[in-house]
Image (cartoon, rainbow, N blue to C red; front, side):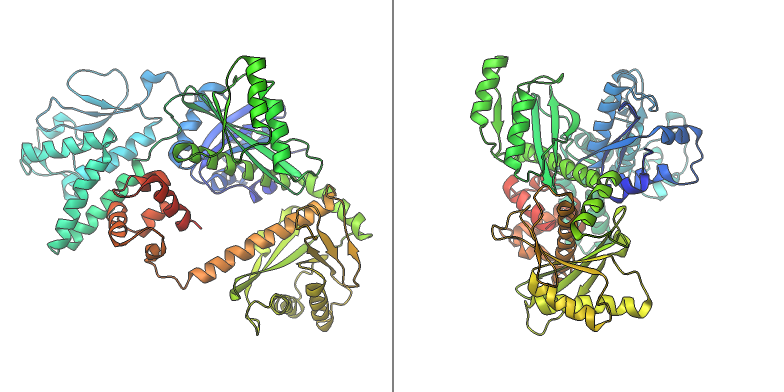
Length: 605
């Protein structure tokens, strides 16, 4: 079956990460990295691909696996590690470390030059690196020139100037060639640049922050703004690259499970280096208990270790059932102590979040698989007792907080899965706040009155997140609008135990359907319902959030005036703070790792 790029891209993540293109036999053809996975992968499947090599690569693709990372820097490092270990035929392979690029500062010169360097290192200069690729070097050099204004010109050019060049005019050099800066002043900038390159960026930013505050007090607002932007530039480049760890062998295991399907992601770290993430899809037989699935996987995986060998530690989302027994069994069979941890903080928690993201993303991709969707629609036809025509499902859900700012969502699924371009949201205002029946009635009336007026597409199935009360109100609206016979109307309500897999399907005539937990039709309806729920919550949060001030740091628990000022001075504004990781936030004076994580979670809620 040919690779369906359109279906794959419909559920592809927009986060930074690494992708591996596989052929029919599962061999890796190409490894790449992207700041936005979906945007990058979309470029391979346009009709106007000119490069013959790219066309040949795309013709051989049978599957694509993605690994989400916390930043583009981590994606770059992981990409290089995978290329060096897998040697994909369509990659330009990096050679050994001596050919990696460096940044060179010519300390033997009276006015040192900062430059790109590749090759043998010689006396009379300091070298910083190696960097994973030339792009990273050039981006860092660009920042050094803007922040520290060091010269980048060759000596032959430098010694023959009689007036400043363009670099000086655009404020990327201090003009040492014509005596516009003293040796001592220039040496200070060289020292700060070296500190920055060696990771002592806190001292550098403290110094720049002090300069910014002095400029502000002196009413030099333009200079203060420029320093603020320079500090933000440093933060963007000097990210802590925690793909390279302090050593040790660790596995980080995360599970995503829903709609009768499970994906287990294992992030593997060996000898302090991340090797990548491997995914397993166990046969759950409709099992929705993550503990049961995870415990079965751990026993199978660690009592029969793969080529990567047993790690020293396994990090889990939650404590697994029988973890002590598993550790003892491994000790007896393998002669090695295996530590299983689940309450982790700091760097280990970031690894766990990365594994969780990848498990969720892989699950979404596999749920969107065409063969899987076709099987679920066939099961839905059997459940309804007739073919669903057209193969189009629309589902409504309501989200509000205490009746405030209620939002109704309408999500649409077709033969290829989610049709996100057809999604709609409705800001609803029922007469009584919190009246979900009236809110649902308003949303459905607005949606289908418009379809009746504009002769839009009707679904084959209208799914309501609710029980017989909501279904009866919606049925009355449809009859009023002249849709008495179409579409098919169903409500999906959680059963008495409120557990997934035990939902009850409500028809307008009062008949209730209770499909088995492993029924593919139920899995499809659960997937559609969950997507409607997610879309409604997102819309409600956005609507509620519009009332908040832009200076929303005031609402974060534990962040007072002094800490707000420190955060804004450190990052130069609210938007750079939103883009920062928890690790970067924790590097602000007075912000503990726990508080940094709380700030990060609050800003991304």
